[in-house]
Structures are given as C-alpha cells and as structure tokens.
Image (tube, rainbow, N blue to C red):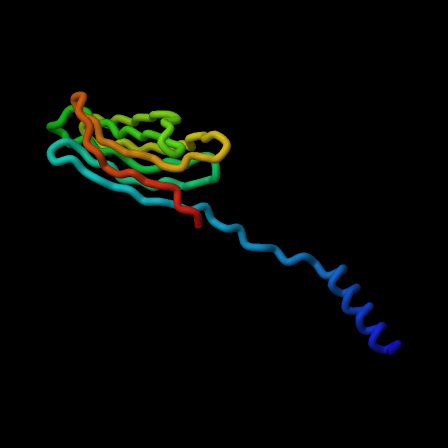
Length: 131
C-alpha cells in the first residue's frame, strides 16, 4: 500500500511540475468572395472573421472604358444594417484592406455589391461561418 501511495504521489507531483504544453492557436475562419459585372468591373477578396469584427482584404477592378467602379460592403448583424463601406477604382485595379469593428455578438453577414453610375450589381451575401 505504501508503494502504491508513493507512486500516486510521484505521478501527481510530475503532473503538477510538468511544463504546460502550448496549444496551437486556432486560425480565424475566412470566406473568399469574387464577382464581376460585364463591361464594368470586378472584385475579389477574403473576409476574416475575428469574433466581433471582420477583416476585409482584396481588390476592386474598374474596366478602362467604364469610368469608375466601387465595391460596396454592407455589414450586418442578422437583418440589422451596422455600417456601409465602399472602395473605388478608376481605370484599373485598387487594393483594399481594413478591419471593420463590430458590436457585441459580432458581425454575422456581409453583403457585397459592385456599384457603377448609381446602379448596383449584387455579388454575394457572405454569412459568418465558425471554424
């Protein structure tokens, strides 16, 4: 019995004094998007979901004969519109990247449009997808 007690004590001490193993960080989930509007422009990018906020990275392309083309992002929590951001390119491509802050509960969906001469062309509705 003494031997069993001594073994249990040694095992407990070993567990208590062993260095903690590092857990691998779970990468934030991402959602790719892309779309085009014939003879107007295109957009390609990635949304990175950080809990409350969303990272937005990509590029909008304006076809040379079209003038300028914007990409519009509508940030939503359920059906509630939280914010609208646009990025515009003229006669070529323009990159973009920022993190859109969100409220408690986070941004749950991003609707994406291309905009030209006051008209909108729907590209995608991208919901949050947990990892």
